[in-house]
Length: 180
Image (cartoon, rainbow, N blue to C red; front, side):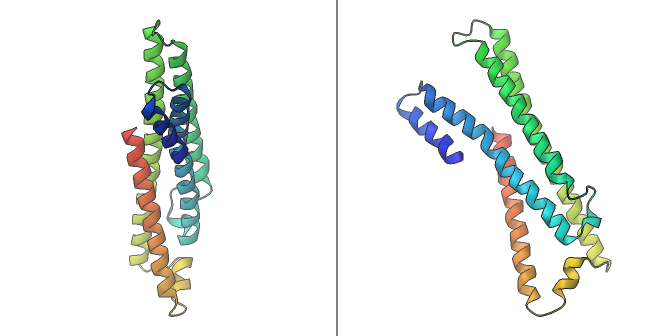
C-alpha cells in the first residue's frame, strides 16, 4: 500500500491537481500504517504467549482485539472526516464544514497515535515485569527450554534479534503516525 500510495504522489509530480493521483496516495498512505501496526499487534500477542503470559497485564488474545479494533476506529474517524471535508466542496463554499472535517481527520490520527502509545507502554511494562521475574529466579517456559542444550543460546540470540526488529518496526510506525 505504501508503494502504491507513493506511486500516487509520483503521478501528482507532473500534475499536482491529478484527482486519481491524490485519491490513490491519500487512501493508501492513510491505511498502510494500520495494517503494519496490526501485524505488530498480532506478533506481540505471540511473543507474550511464548515468553510467559503471567507477566502481561492483558491476556495475550486481547492485544489484537483491542488495538486492531482501535486502529479500525481511527480509520473510520478519518474516513468520516474526509467525507465531511469533501462535502464542503472544492471551492470551500462551507468553511465550517471543512474545518469540522479536518478536525475529525486529525482526531482520527491522534487516536491512532494514542492507541499505539498505550500498546507501547503495555509492552514496556511487560518487558520490565519479565526481566524482574527473570532476575528473581522465576523461570518461564521459554527460559527452561533454553537451558536444555547448547544450541539454545543461538535460539535465544535469534529471538532477541527478532524482538528488537519488532520494537524497531513499532517505533518507526509510531514516528510515521506522529509525523502524519
